[in-house]
Length: 226
Image (cartoon, rainbow, N blue to C red):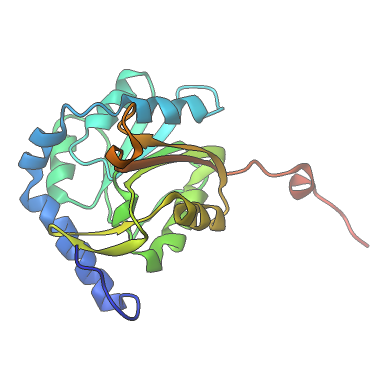
């Protein structure tokens, strides 16, 4: 992996990161689908659904939904998922299946506020450069209902970022990831490593769950002052 040196990416560099990373997925969309369609991420789907405290069915945003594998899983369980992806090729695949999907990239999100019971960011948020991470996490926070849950699963690393096989990624350890997410206002629920049942050095994925806190009684009160 090529790790950038010196200052964080400029606006032009961020635009280039988005263009090239999405272009990688557009160019390999069919190959990606064939290589991931049978991956078992039910542990992650279950973790999100189990953490949501609202009454089902849940309104779920699948952030970086790709060709739609997990959208189908959520729908098959009776929930109300919508996908979001920056790749036009993936969006076309999802729409061909009759599923709802929004064509947006992570650095230019336009999300409704207070809408989702859960956000499923499976192998997606690691594409956000560190410079933009707090802002993007804040936009996701605003789109959750109070009490809603963000699930993320990212390839873990030693807090480096850069290009890796045609895609830009940031690779965090848990301590750093926790600082970013709690710094955006979320409360930690828990985390684990994948695949399950293997030694830690053979578990490249860091999965974590975070809640948008409910407003406290004081915050929600209409307090009159003189």
